[in-house]
Image 1: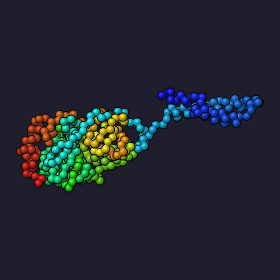
Image 2: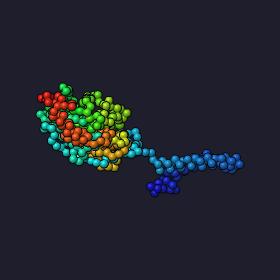
Image 3: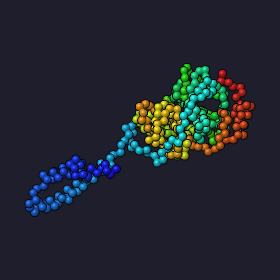
Image 4: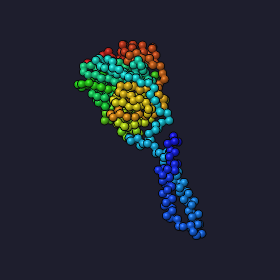
Length: 369
């Protein structure tokens, strides 16, 4: 490092310091009178310390500029290029979600909930689904967790045994708390291919038997923010100082980011929370600036830390969801569409559904058809 700065102190006429000293010497030689009298000697004596001080300041400034150049700023961010976290999160696991059949004629890419990543407390499942009429997800039960359906394209109609019915379209979100029990259907509501994400979030043991509830947000009502080439839709949590109105019984953040080419993102994540990224479109560098870029349909599990950094160095848009949640640290026993804390509770849930009790009273008399 020192070798490249040695020319600064060279006596060569091209040295920056030599040139500065020469200019000052020439300027002062014109200003100083001949030193032939006592008065001129005293003036010269007074001038020399000032000249020496001035030369010293020039040397220090020029040296500082060459040895310590200003920090390079990102073209899309006002902050320095360095990561602004004490403990940046790194990618510790990378899972490619492969297509598989699910429901009635539907196709899903399952990352969380598959054989490579059984769960990521408090997250139980993440599917990127694709379905066309007449396929879909006909009548089926749930107990003990929440489902979050986020439409990427098209429309889905949801109805359940309580008589509730509604349709979510591109950009809409349905946050359903199954609680003690619900039976519902999710079917395509328009022609063509319907695409979206469904995330399952576990409930704490104290919340598994609460009454079902819904939170639904139209696309226009989802909190959004945009900054330095990065746009975010905040389904849950907070980004860029903007917060979502969604209440998360299990503390969760869930966001949809779109990054322009050349942009970068530094998103805080609470320490102690488990977090992952799912790439919808494009490719980007996640975690560490020198890492290999990850592409669409990959789920990236993040390690411990206080924030995530992302760089889009490609020439195309990068779109991904970031989710993080507070771990429940409780036993997870899953049987199909029921998620409880023990095998006995799973058996009870199956019996309740079969006999129509403890939350499933309307199950036997209801059909979405």
